[in-house]
Image 1 (cartoon, rainbow, N blue to C red):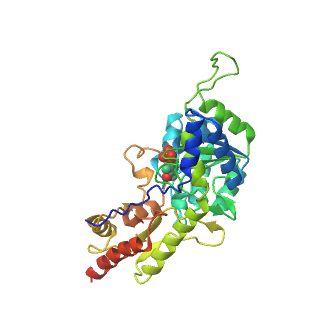
Image 2: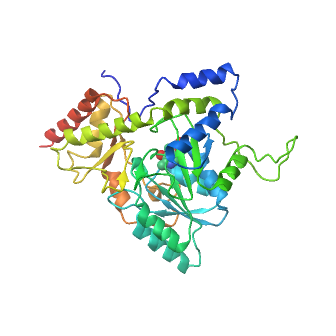
Image 3: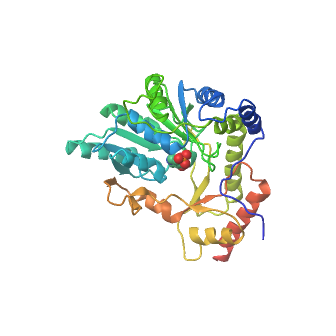
Length: 379
Ligand SMILES: *Cc1c(COP(=O)(O)O)cnc(C)c1O
């Protein structure tokens, strides 16, 4: 059996253990502690954002963002439909209604035209949406200029789910820092990882103070445990923040490696004209290319996404269909949705290729050879 090639596996730098060792040496094996403080500071410096709360997941960070904006039962939140379910679930935790917005064909992210249409439509029903939650999928920034303009015109706050887009930039500004609040994930499959973790980021100090308070059980100032609000246990531990610090030291190399993988796939597969990669459309977009993704534009019985996926699996290579849009998920099917068919088409025709920063050129060549074989054997 050939060695396993993973879709996106953790890639340690070797520097993580120094910070973990420090935590052990000082017996700081608690949630919070010096690594958490330092990780938050270092994240803020890297992203050029003033305030950061490290959380125990990206999902927790999204939940906190919604709570801080006062999203509650009966409210509507406009949200990308082409995303991972973790973007949507926290809206439901709050008893609010996700209003699903389909994507545009070039960025695969929230379509500004449909966003505008949804806002107009909801307003005509006397239901002004309380927030826009936009995902930057697979590392590709959403069309933020249009989305922020629409949001400003209607005075609706924007939260960015930058779980997959850590280090990606839009017009030179880091994804997650363009809206009023941004969320990150450091889950094991993301571009850098703390094994599990996330962060909520903002330039609004009050928001992040509130997030830190709520995320550590909402303890009022007192020597005993005094509570006047419902709290959450959402903070990152001092050990995991140590891993994050070691990972953050090599983020530049990691992004470079993901972008190199992406460029190599494009180059090696350039003869197959039916393959279209998710691509930066112009200079405003800088993707971390967390995953390299493509669609087979005109699938046939002999050459389609599944044929390729199964051929790769046969050779012990992990690949995965693109996200199944939320408006097609059994659990979300009844939600209001503004749909144009784009994400459904992507789901039917698209594939995520192995994209880890620890892949060797030979690994990528092995993947490409199998795709080429599929292409040749269809003729
Ligand atoms: C991974 C991911 C999340 C959730 O992050 P966790 O840290 O796994 O909770 C949210 N949104 C998107 C788009 C993601 O890919």
